[in-house]
Image 1 (spheres, rainbow over the protein chains, first blue to last red):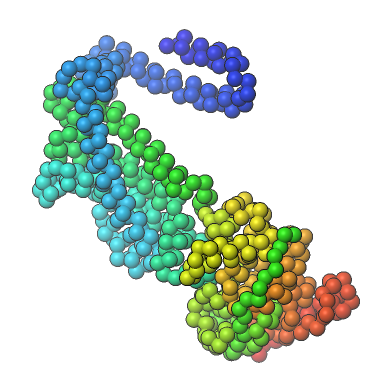
Image 2: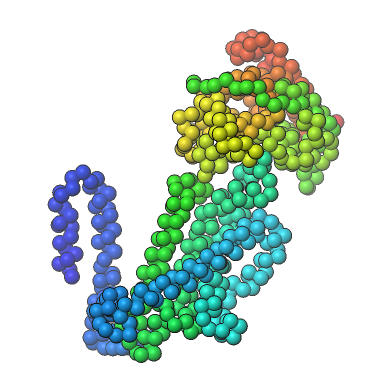
Length: 290
Length: 263
């Protein structure tokens, strides 16, 4: 492991691409290299802890963990079916099912939160009407909703999407409210004197001026949607990254639990990138208000 | 400069009678202002800070309501902001997420015009302020003087009958300032749009205006802001170095510095 790290800068020092600006390249390489030791150490401690069946604080019994290599094999099986068991190739059923729930919930939350946030940010009457309810409901964790949702909606996709929508809603609405409040008065005056009225002002000035705050809220909301996914799939949906984690727990296949955790992390990360890509296509290189 | 000639635009007269503005907390910013401006006239309003000149302009724009008095533009009472009265702000007020072309097209696009008509109007006014080469840039990529040119083009493209300018060149360096003054003068000669121009600079006022309205007073003087005097500028050419020009300048300066007395 240490030899791998040591050889990289030597290889990079060989002037293979002289056209590249050396300082920038070296800076990026440095960032990558500095990012490596801690995760590698983590894997090492994990491996040693498993082998030595360490007992850590919090009563963590590392003997019950799979080896990192077991997780890697489980991941390969989940993705490409290298073993022949219940989890082989299952990712390609679970991921679309989970992603569909996350994006439906997130889209629904956005559709409600952005218009409401714009109105609340601009009109004190609307704000006074909805603000108490939002502050009342916001601190209720999604976990606390699960039993009630099970009774009201029952088990299945609807319950799952409802929980995701609920969780993603708050960061988006709060981001939109703060963005809509901070629109420079001068831009609203400019729009009005050019003949913009009512809804036009909201669409043409408030929305673009609040865009950075809305985007931030949406990113937090999408992240939260993935966080809530596992919980939302306790509502008895048959497929999904979360349901597979619970299935793995029931059959005591620890490596598969960790595989599920990794897949959710990667899916969450990739969907954030996807969202940013969508915004980049949407705004191109338009300068937005910081 | 690659500028284009402009066709005469719309124009309107302004009638202000008994205008007062009292802010909450009983600060009287302005009292009993009467002013009549003819169609096509260029009027500059000068005065010290707090004399109510910006308040007067904001009431004309419709951003603020007067406490008392009437304001009519082209015979219609002012009840709120509208596209018949274009405003040029000191800090430009351009939409940062729109390019120069999109900023200028903003007003025309709101009207019932075809795409080709909007494009034609937009291009004409961008050319009029000499920014054709920068049409695809965003405001933040331009200097202050260029941004103010965009703001002027944006307002003119909307074909206002009254142009309201609130210290528009106050944030610019001296050279850019004189450039833009000359350009504004040319634009006014071509469009004949009525202009109300608020400024701190007496020289700027005398250089640009047909009449200079001198306002004095304000909260710090214990007297509400009011019109002290109106000085007609009867100079055939505005050579800022000529004795005649400086005589008018001196006359206005004396009026600006008159100690206001309680009415």
